[in-house]
Structure formats: structure tokens, C-alpha cells
Length: 198
Image (cartoon, rainbow, N blue to C red; front, side, top):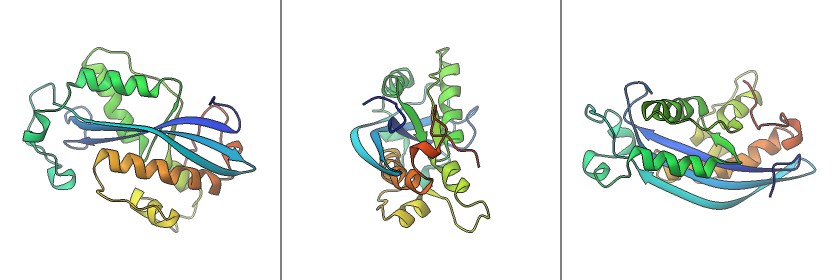
């Protein structure tokens, strides 16, 4: 499947981190779910193709995990994780030729860029889309909530094990076709990406 007006090949990503600051906190879990989108007269359907997830061993000294109460990932689990170099190489491979999608993409992409910079690697530069921004663009008067859990409820997607990167990436992939359909289909979004500014 190619990226054409009626089709998009996407990789939905999600990260779990030790905190909110990409400069001082660490990626500790990465997930990627491949979905191929097809638009038929404004109705978008998606076919989940592949998924991958890994825990990531922090590559530099780090403070106690501050977000553990959210994602439940502790140091003992991370010892068995992949190196950051290996995890990023696999993520980069999965993004090649595809649109990168995430819920609150700015957060995830900031960590991805910072991690590449830390390792002196060239960061990938795929077309990108943010489901949070798309959802907000459909609600200019801000009458609805736009968290991933809210989108799942709105579009009838079960979100189990929230704040696990793979579960969140799967859920984002599953709401993506309905969200883009509500936006008017792939043709209603900019041709080169799925990005919609809030």
C-alpha cells in the first residue's frame, strides 16, 4: 500500500518515560503499531498490520522513576530492556516510509529527537500526525475532552492497561480511522501528512 490520496501507511507510536522533560528524563518503553488506512468516500478504515514494543534500559545515570505510579515500570523490569541504541534503530526502521502518528505527538517526538541527539544519531523525519490535535480541531469551542481515554470512549474502543506503551499505541491506532472519518476523510486533511493544527 502506498501513501496516495485515498491511502496512508502509518506507524502509531507511544512512549513511557521517567518524567515529562525530554532533556532530563528517559524513555523506558517504546511501542509501534502499523496501520494501513483506506478512504472510501470519506469513510476511513484501518487494517492493523504489525506491532512491536520494548522496554528500554536508560543509557545514562538516572534518578528514581518519578512516573512509576502511572505506568508501573520499575528498575528491575528495565534491566532486561533493550539498549536505547537498539530500540531507536528498530523504531526508525518501523517509521521508514510511513506517517508517524501519536496522541500528543509533541511529547513523544520531543523524547525521540532528544534520544537521537544524545546518541549523536540522525533523527527520522517522517510525515507526522497528532490525534490530539486532530480531535481538538474538530471541537473548536472545546466542548469535549480530548485525552486518549476520552477518544476511546467516544469511538467505542476498549482501552485496557492504559499507560502501557503498546496498549496506548493500539488504542490510538484503533481510534485513528474513526477520528479521520469525523474530520471528513483523508482528503480533508493536508495531502503530505495527516497533521491538523489545533
